[in-house]
Amino acid sequence: MQHQELQSPVMLRLKHVVIRTGLSRSTIYNMLDEKSSSYDPDFPRQVIMSKAAVAWVEHEIDAWINNRIQKRNA
Image: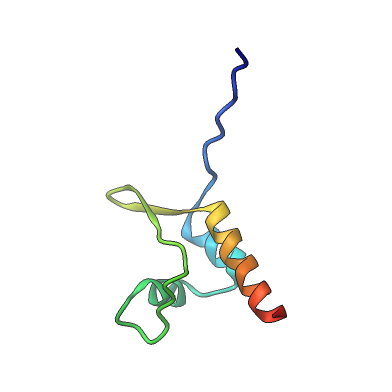
């Protein structure tokens, strides 16, 4: 039997999500807030890492960016 190496997802802290998306911190949190006019139900939800830390799954952020590009090109 072959052993498959399990890869843990890469987690991005907020400053790296800001860099990846080009969005500000406040815009990111507004996109997550259902009460905000900037709410985006497709934007990836953060993962609670500890009481004081959240992070986003890298491939989910990449998929969201690629989806925005596809919508632009449609």
